[in-house]
Image (cartoon, rainbow, N blue to C red; front, side):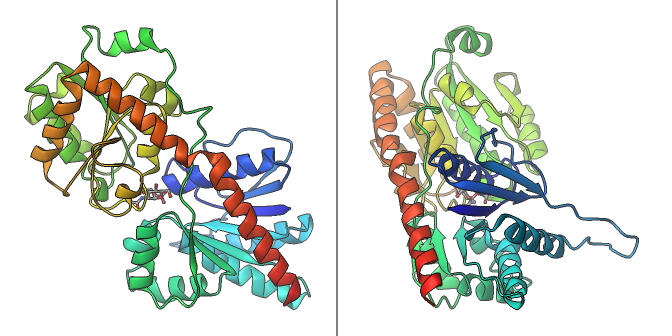
Length: 377
Ligand code: GMT
């Protein structure tokens, strides 16, 4: 099948998932066309993969260059010139409405193409609900030939927020266990924790929804009980506050803010515990990547996190903002080597349920259904 994938090319979970999906599909023989404004960060070369850049010319009149219009025109051109069978857009805003518009334009010239929209989280729960976008989001989701959500929780949130007229298929995010596994990085671990300190890690885009200051508070409480280090990976608007808090709590010497990193498997390989303190998380792909590397997860119970992190098995879940509870659970895992190893094994074993070989066929089946139905109609 010839499939166009539209996504954000950045480090965010939706872009990462879309890129991994495209790469996995290309290995199964599909021809994949990424259409984004930048080459996706995790994209590797493969003969079946094409990348089309959306360029948005500037003009003095444009205070806000019309990205959606540029994307729609690029979609029309790429679909026509490459004879695509299907479009799969990740993150509703503005990708679903651009796909709808491109489909309408192509209909005028006698070409028809179905599009599938995958909802990822904040496109529904934060940005999408805002009245600035809501009518367009609802319309373009409903016009999709199929809708998927990355968790049952996100499906429920979507149905509660919008007048959805179609079934939403839940297809969980997935992991490549051949890339995300615990490898021997002892030399690297010794550099960061020279005295055998436990290593805690957090990965995010440092937005408000991640509550990164809670990560620092949890770390401070764990550090009172045992020598440990914290790795803060990623970047975003809340990073200065988190750094300031770590200085005022006098824990900054044991925290490394590493910024955006590509070799997440290596960093997770040296980590003992993963912290995710979000007030909402549709799924928590970063937590799954950690579990796949054998790192137990201390998270909140917000959104779909309970669909991957199993309380008492792969880690623990606490109420949002309950840093005492999170610290208590973190200590209970980290203070005993045997318990820690047990949680590491359980996290790894559970992550394997989300292995890409189980999830990719669910997308392929949906693609086939959509394309067949479209041909019949
Ligand atoms: O975490 C973010 O804010 C980035 C965001 C995105 O769309 O790039 O991530 C969302 O999609 C991921 C992939 O499906 C999910 O694993 C994240 O849980 C989800 N983030 C939120 O719901 C806050």
